[in-house]
Image (cartoon, rainbow, N blue to C red; front, top):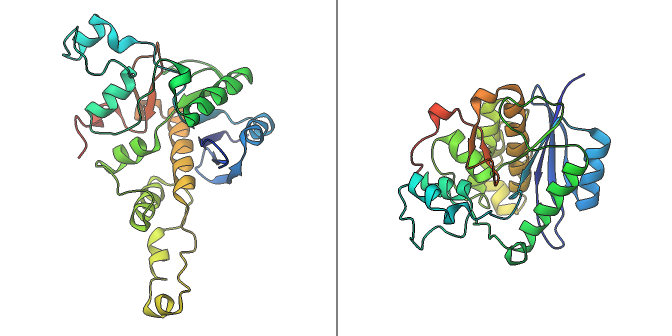
Length: 256
């Protein structure tokens, strides 16, 4: 039986989650939207082997306030900076990959983060422990950051995801990695004077940026399971790591 890998792009408020389900050959088995309970039901019904979630798995544990941790990164033990964030977030920013910082108090976290905390708890209740390199087990759950995924796959910071160019760039990355998404260059062929004048310009086969984020998450889950040597855990396991789809030796010191 083929293995399945689920990527979930979380949201808060009225917008639904976006999810993507890949098999071990990177064929898309499902891609869509659903509310919190619907996505949990999807996991219950399909039982993917690894689930990757685009959200922090927990509040920060205050590690960046500890003198030993700060000295590890060359920071002053009593310094004011970088105290209210997770180790993984400090490391990501140090490498030039921007992301939101997670507060230590869950009540201070924005709604989308709190939704993420709830989702991780629900998935753990379904039998998905946090993924660890080399850990044995049939199911696993990991934290991803799609912007970081595309950054390391490109070797540079991607274009804005809410632009046409950014979507084309991200889909091209996934196409090059072997996912069964259409070649986005074929969509560009629709960019003609006739379509522009008529207002009928469409880009068939081009995924939304939410779908592309979910696909990147699912792809990272597949790599972590099938080729763990090709992923890099960033941060401290004690408070949660972000998994990036790049081999440790290829993880650049700084992305620009």
